[in-house]
Length: 333
Ligand SMILES: Nc1ncnc2c1ncn2[C@@H]1O[C@H](COP(=O)(O)OP(=O)(O)O)[C@@H](O)[C@H]1O
Ligand code: SF4
Ligand SMILES: [Mg+2]
Image (tube, rainbow, N blue to C red; front, side, top):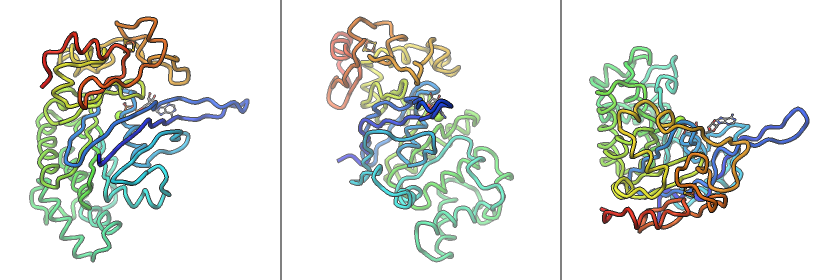
């Protein structure tokens, strides 16, 4: 059984107009993905595809007007969508932890970093302060913060961007989560620090035997670090499977376009390189959401495509996925 199984998750932003009419931005449409213990899953897609919203929906971090209107999130045998706010808070920070982009905004600027780590441990562990303090020092060491004892009383503003991200990772790991979600964990850091942080995450995932979801717009990161990849477009997972297989024989036209663009061009932003606009979330087309951007679109695409099993564990949401893959297959991995 998967550690995390998300089925047909739908998150909408629901507004009530001045004339009391409801308007809904359908930001997540049928997000279906799964992740096993010990696996690293990359979620990739252009800005606005719904990557962060997927993470926030899984973690119970949505605020109005965002609302989950359908689907299921099974984690470790529990349906998270039927838990109370207290129950989900108890899981978040303990069994599921999150690391976000721009670590400084996630650290409390008025509290020394050691105290912040102790606080996270105390909230969930029920141990003594001394035990939490020792755990904080151990974690600071594990994430490569030099001289943890000396840095225990440092203030967030005294840290470089890379060091602040290490503190945030230490904080995420304080309660040894089963699932770590890292949302663009290295965006904004310089290239050398990016590689250091990602190598660190990879080591920690192995050391603590966690599952990890890395959200990124960087295909190079996915190719290097992720066992599985899920490609998002307009709030849907359009393709998921083992990274090597998806990258060698992409079955969805959007994935094919992404992979055909050079890394240098993708660095400049996925959407600006592929051209076109995402569909209007307030007024989605009835058929395939990729229609307006898809070079292979036909009349059939005016009906929603099902998720097709391209090969074992490799799925694609396109009417023509199976035949495309057969025609273009080079033999998988
Ligand atoms: N308050 C809001 N009202 C309507 N749509 C929103 C709101 N906030 C975010 N969105 C939309 O939700 C979509 C998903 O956003 P997000 O998950 O942040 O994308 P990503 O992380 O892939 O860049 C985007 O298209 C964004 O425009
Ligand atoms: S169903 Fe049609 S529009 Fe959608 S991705 Fe496939 S070919 Fe393109
Ligand atoms: Mg995002």
